Image 1 (cartoon, rainbow, N blue to C red):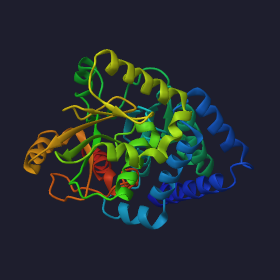
Image 2: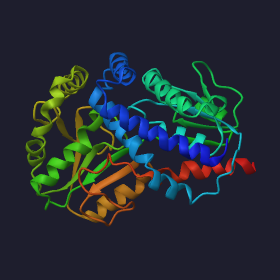
Image 3: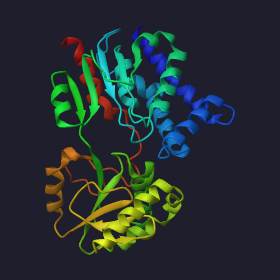
Length: 340
């Protein structure tokens, strides 16, 4: 299969998904897949799956996809067998890895998590339906993965990681996103921050779980601004987490604020439990810079109006917007395998 055939197939996949989204009620396969996925994993609500599908459609836009690929030396065929172990915290969160492995002419040996097996099977079968030659390049595994040339996996236990390190690998550290306020944020910006916090119920590495704010900032402004997101109270698993964490803080008599569906708690850690956002106040922004620099490997995005941090900050409400260039490192890693 040529590179052009692979590119054309993925572009067609984007069109197919776009059509499925527009004709959801008439598209029995797509509607059934959404229903089955949500039944198996209630975190995969139909709106969240549609949001994830829209992200894939954006990635597969012909102009942006071809422009992105033009920056790489991609062979007509490589033939390395690359294992991908999925985490499945959010719908289709492994799709960029699937794209990078297959577009580069390699064999995808994928082991879906229990959470995302339905969605992964659906999209890979769609791709094979568009280009049957992909049949020879796609393996879906339920058991232990063996006999691979390289592996992409989320962080796992130390003993397994030591075993994996004898192969070329990408082992992804658990990351989260943060927000840094300067005190001049508008109510609209604080409300937009809600998208960074609540999208996918806060389970993505793109979600903000920690907020730095000036000493003079009234943290209650955040809870008030987030009121439009109270729809999460209708999701029982989210609210179970909210009630559980609230009870822990009450029993331990730990100071916190809440608005009935989100807890704000002062804490130095970056990663908060679901339905909780940690915050930390500062008097000197340079201390925040040092803090962020020391933990930059654990940070995916910084949301802020300030542009003085170790990673370029992004505007409020934009953490869930997909940028295909985020996957440069993955495709670079894969394309270099053919020389090994």
